[in-house]
Image (cartoon, rainbow, N blue to C red; front, side, top):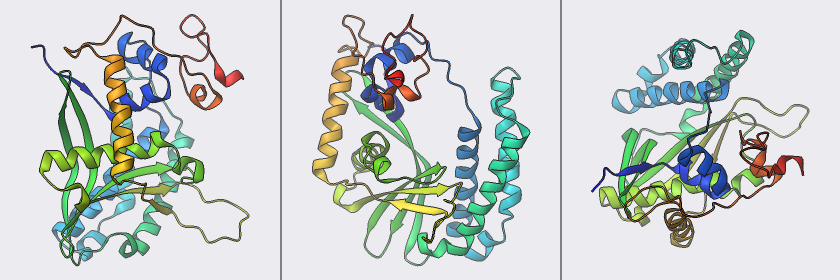
Length: 294
């Protein structure tokens, strides 16, 4: 049998938004996505927060607080910038002013995080189980689901596991983003696959999005925080729903041997929301359904 093809949540999510966009990216390999200042900042902020928590849980809160997080962030931004630029053949993807702005935003996030850390992460009664923990779960049709869990914390008192996904955002998630299944369903699949891969009952696994905000709203009287947490509905009915969509994705896109299907037409689902960030929206030779213009 041929080598297993790997899929990620982002691949499934893209199909869920628009099967035709997925086909252009993954079957035809016409996508030209490259990293940008947002992905650079997201990766760097992930690394700094994970390093702090690693030191906190493996050593002490005092040792973690002594880390020079401002220097950590600067170093990570520079290192990741150089790596991405090298991957892009030397072409820079953001300006110096953007780097400075995002770095200063990051400092404000880290300052808030250190002051309020105990509201989100406690050492007493908790253990750090993993950082960037790999998921490798076998699906039907010779397909393997791959993913990485940002943080896994164990509540040793209640004997429960919490899977945490770190997200960077401009202003945080509003009610529409919280209701967007393509944002929230990632952790539902992670919960299911972690449960089966590590033989942990699903009713002992909790999930949470840990969202850090670059900007606060101006001219508002409401108190604001740089950190937002969100727990999506993740019981059995919710997991069954996303699992049915994953099954539909597998049936729509793959043969029984795990190869991409080229024997049918993939659906086009144009809308303002779906087409807004699609890189093919202004390429009528590839897609004639630009919903962003509707």
